[in-house]
Length: 116
Image 1 (cartoon, rainbow, N blue to C red):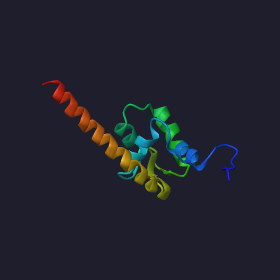
Image 2: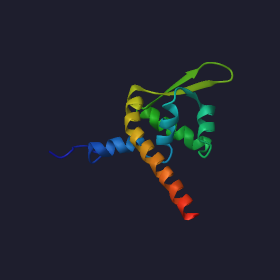
Image 3: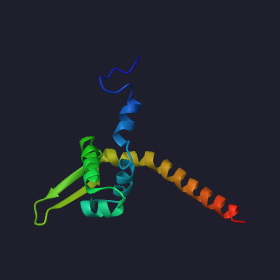
Image 4: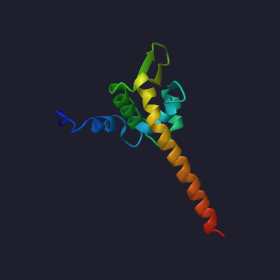
């Protein structure tokens, strides 16, 4: 039976949409280490602009992957953490991290051999 949805073609597309993008996997990777304030996230990913980080966090929050807690204080204190769903997606990110580490190591070895 074909997947019947007005927006997505199949469940895989839904899942990929939730975590796709240049910054979402990296945000999730940083939050996998624990709750972070906005400034900590920005320092952990200095290449992303403040605006884009805000937009990506809002999308992740909207998809139920990230929890945003605003504390009523001066100055404002906002904390971000992974939800249960977000933590479960960590199991998907781990193989990518392992592949990335393996790739980096193989590139280093190749560069060392090219220098000989």
